[in-house]
Length: 206
Ligand SMILES: Nc1nc2c(ncn2[C@@H]2O[C@H](COP(=O)(O)OP(=O)(O)OP(=O)(O)O)[C@@H](O)[C@H]2O)c(=O)[nH]1
Ligand SMILES: [Zn+2]
Image 1 (tube, rainbow, N blue to C red):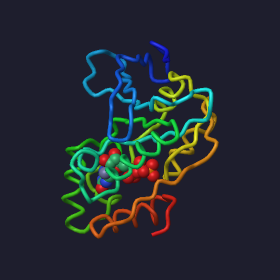
Image 2: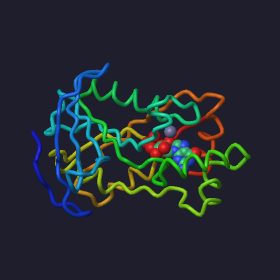
Image 3: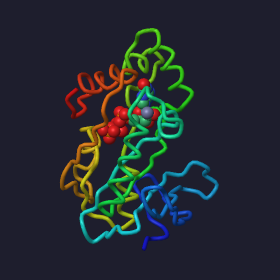
Image 4: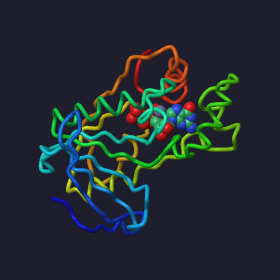
């Protein structure tokens, strides 16, 4: 189903291993992509068993959020977005690309430091800046390379983030449509989502 090896914009990205994972939403082939076998944190593609690369594929590019994805933190919407994305991927023969971009690319230690600053009143943008870090350090070339390696050329992208759509400009993979991924806000994440809407241009209406 997949190419064993592909040269990418970032070097030599290799599919190191894959296995079928039965999840509450359905059976997904988990494919680990890394430059070397000893990489303990490879990017992961979770490809639903009914995915057909010859057709446009529903794709979620999900940035790692250990607090939300694994522990259900209410500070953000990540965990619920991941569950909804897997559910939709199972329904439509799609996939989730799980990118190791914790904390918008600043890592879990810095994200926890940023949360301390947010508890003192800074918003999610200013907390990163206060730490001397980028507001958003993510790039999505690796996701495009993973899609190419999986033989996919046309996608419907599950996101509210305009930067993810812009990343596909001039790419060999075409975004046919954006599919919103809206999670009902909670009191704990309302301000965070409002900052994303008002200051980061995310496409939802609170
Ligand atoms: N630095 C930092 N990162 C955060 C914070 N809250 C969530 N994250 C990280 O942000 C990433 C998710 O980004 P979001 O902006 O929520 O969503 P997105 O993936 O850009 O956009 P969507 O595709 O619409 O969901 C994950 O890597 C989270 O760990 C925060 O307050 N500070
Ligand atoms: Zn999160």
